[in-house]
Image (cartoon, rainbow, N blue to C red; front, side):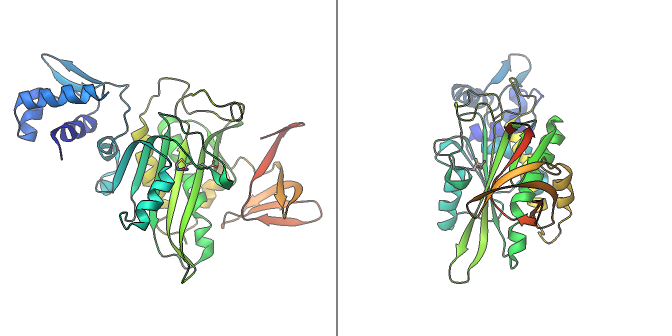
Length: 327
Ligand code: BTN
């Protein structure tokens, strides 16, 4: 690992502290001059490192450059050795993960992140607005799952992981809109896209890419979504993206470890935005309406249509929020 990377790792894992040039030089077995040169190079790459002659070096509070080092410094000790790939820009972290997976490059728990995506993918073939400074992460889950119903709860587990992490680190009241969107109030903050690598011989899916996109700090949203999208922070985030990604990663790996354990569905239901609400949706091409009664342990949405109780297992719903407004 280059000296720059090693210094960055030290600064990231001692955020809020100032490390003297001598301290860094001793711990990395290099000269103080080499430390100084590496710091200059990092500053040149955009890292905001405060340098004071008598005290030493510290990462500035506002420094939020996504890097393998910043992620590793924030990951729970159990996951310090996870495979991490950090991009400045990529078409789509899910697409990148899928390509690398096919090439045999990724193992269970691999984490791919990017500062921006040029072709972010949403559900149903939609694009996902992915400008710089957002959170775009894909986690590779390699597990042999026999039961299709276990596959169906990967996305709900991811929604719980995201909601729980946001609440823990920011206190924001994030809610889950079935099946895989996270909302604050009436606006969408985050979308999740789970893709599977199917083995056509056996018909089984053994590998899953869970892609999570979060609007981290306020952006000029395009016209088609600006009324419906929101960001976690208006300006000046109080946490870094790496902190949130690391927390989501830990929760996601833990919640999907044993998918037969559905206790997380209790949390999914507790923070559901849709229970008790009137919803509209397409069923076999026909527009339907009903009232959401519950969500079952398989992630199915149980709807009272008046003359019929239906369980939706996939699709998209709109929720009636006022007389004429649907979200
Ligand atoms: C949706 O809301 O329709 C799902 C959006 C999922 C976006 C994430 S961002 C990281 C990963 N890479 C992608 O191209 N898509 C997912």
